[in-house]
Image 1 (cartoon, rainbow, N blue to C red):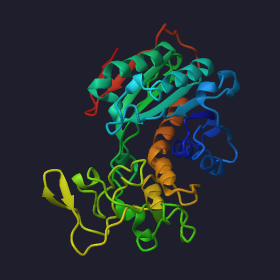
Image 2 (image 1 turned 180 degrees about the horizontal axis):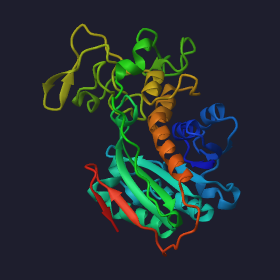
Image 3 (image 1 turned 120 degrees about the vertical axis):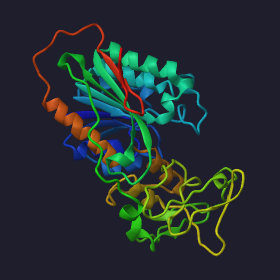
Image 4 (image 1 turned 90 degrees about the horizontal axis):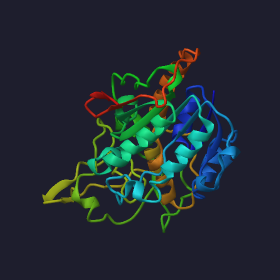
Length: 350
């Protein structure tokens, strides 16, 4: 089955879907610091590097599904919180524009948990109803990637729609019995990381691709809380910034020295996780190489990606559902039905 990928980034979502049996036939990534990485790892995919705003839907091939995560900074707790009032938030309009024109069997949109905060409630509900009015049965879920074989606490909103004529809704796959931790993910890399070159440029002396770490001072905000998770726990959320990358579990937790103030244990060596370690935590295989001159771009690509194992779990469920579709056309209402779920799992219909 063929899918189109929008806001593709480094391809975490795409790789998960490919591993589940889908073919990514066309993708769009506007950022010139990211596109080379996507092109290297998906040589068989047509990659369009113009902004989605400038791409007419007629230029995009027919497909069975559309996937993508419109830029999340507008909805992020750490971002400006502009939501749909921000130009990046309005890129959802282009996602819906393409979906309207192509009308595939399904779509999947991913975004940060901040999207469901109270201050964004009206905008979020409007987005859901716009999907619904296109004739899709729509569900949304707030999922933690750690429940799907990802060694990281990472909550994300997943919105999935199936054409209403098939009469079914998407339900997330069953969570993993055991959740992986940092030891499972990066133990074998612990002695081989090296610092980035001055100016945080890529270091060509790495033994493993992308296994250099960001070097620089720690901001007051960074020092306001503990940034170390031990080996037997999942990582903190991998962010799209080298400066804010979690610290390696080789050292003990930071100590509290005052309100919103933490410090390092004397005599211990602290360093940030390397780009490759972050990629492992995001469940990218080591064969997925990130191309960059500045390690900041490496962290950006990795941190903005959908964890591959989470994407694979979602894609596998979607593939199962599609294969089970009753292909006899059912009577379709003007609007598909909408179901939502909150973090506690309560369901409501509209």
